[in-house]
Image 1 (tube, rainbow, N blue to C red):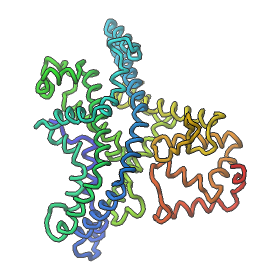
Image 2: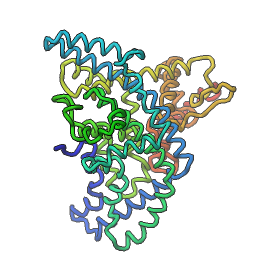
Image 3: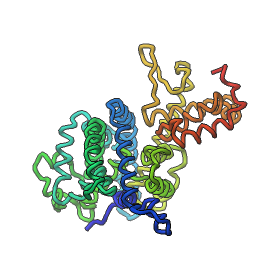
Image 4: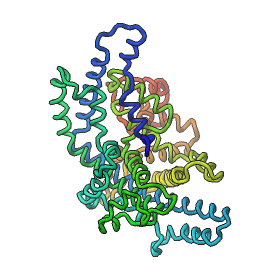
Length: 451
């Protein structure tokens, strides 16, 4: 029987975290009704967050960011599959299974062969099927996750907002529910576009990753099994489908759900300090004033960091030593390679003669330009590429001047790009960032005329 997955455990810890008011009360500070006051403040903050993303333009912008990320995820999947096959070939060689090793080597090579039955190209880029036909994708997702065996997994996949609302006292009755329930329902209605695009994206990620997991671990095709009406056999780990000692379907489905949540920035951060910071921010009443969407900010930073050269060295070492989780380590290595390739491509574009003067714009074929600030992770890639370009011009001094010229405009834009967060000047953290940039900006307007 499976316990709570790591992502679910981390989310529960965040939802059930003691608020700062409760913490102070525990140390003898008299605050009558501290728990209820903290819950009401958090409900107010959640309503404010919901209003921030309720516009159709926000939903469209978020969906565009998903479209930008999907090709990168497809290439990551393809490379990851090849690494896993290569590792298994090495394991068979070490075990003395020469015939099995030879077959695994051919499978590794054929992962990149579009004409081979063992090709991993189609499955790796299958996200587009869910985008092209979202109703079919939603139907298939529901068919799998709405089975009685998967009720907890379905709740993890779909009911995060409901769980968060329960953690803030929704449904307990009293004056709080009387005041907040109709407002929360109204905000939920306004969020129909944003929630819709989120689940279109999430379903596409879930089905693609589940299909890949089944083909890799069981050697079966998800769509074929569903079309043949063998879903029950799939859920019951039928020996006809599941090889001996292979992962159970529940484990494969859990991995796919956690992956889909991760790729839609809906899971807690993995980095320990970020987890702690998020827990602290969630416990402080009024933390929305500082950072409106801390979870997305931390997840965005993690994603950008995963593409920085060298950050996958620990995962590569674990694979070399035959330790750790091969699938997750292969994904970390692949994401690092693809991320570095994307950064290099952005750098090549920024240093090309046809690139616009402004680093946050790309040229269109009709001669116009498009601002890519709203498209994450395109914006941070172009920002880092421009920073490297400025460094190449004159070293660290030139880069510093570029960052802090014009009252630190480029420094502030970099923080926004790399965190995926717009720190407004009337927010506390926005004021702090402005003050920091101004400290360095007093005498650094040397490049203003050149720009």
